[in-house]
Length: 320
Ligand code: ADP
Ligand code: TRP
Image (cartoon, rainbow, N blue to C red; front, side):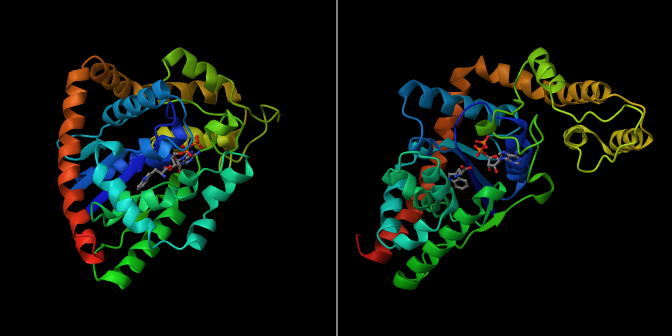
């Protein structure tokens, strides 16, 4: 099985990004072959600042490595280091019905928010399809919000295959339901756009400060409370093993506790959980040459595979 996924470099990752997406990606690196990349060409549809795009892309590589991506197992690279993908994108664009893209929710959402409706934003899913098809990926682990893009990718691949013969492998999305929606400090979905995030790589002190500010209800301390559905409990559960989780649930149901205690336990659990990743991140950050080598090696391996698939597609449709 060949696994592939991409991550947009849009800033410092938060708990929602990790539990909803990144963790699943990394868990799949033990499959036969896996490819992970930083989608800087996609980010160009929203980031219009050279230094920012370069920095975010590099930081995202450090994040991946720190969180356990092993370059000996997986191929890690930057999207734009594989020009074959952009070339394949045009071949796909030539046969993609406009209506297919007009139905995409992510595009419609951004347009509704008033984000400039550039062609790159509109054709974003075609580049994403090229990303996936260029590596003959079977499985694409993604957050729930990306499943429509994977469907579009399948539609495009099917259309190309129908017109020109069996060129592309049809990929499947893989979504981990259990952590599909990590709540933020206000109880709503954690998201950069809601300003309710807790970042993975915050130092312990600011992280604890964010945690202590998580909004809670004002029921009296003595009242027993139902843990399921409580966002503070949900956050604690992300880090706790079964016994710690059960103990916490029992405390909720007994009552006579303060949310402050829960927050302290959460801060401690989160700190223990992310401390090794924070250390690894600092180690990689101190060795830019090593990171450069990893990316160079990743790009070379990715180009080899993408080159084969591109040639197959070019021959099939008659441009070679
Ligand atoms: P944000 O909403 O903060 O801008 P992104 O849209 O960049 O986050 O999300 C990147 C990935 O992380 C997506 O695949 C998305 O599904 C996942 N993700 C983001 N927020 C959450 C969340 N609160 N719970 C679960 N997954 C999330
Ligand atoms: N659109 C994805 C996101 O915002 C990132 C991405 C780009 C991607 N190309 C991909 C994900 C290919 C999976 C496969 O999260």
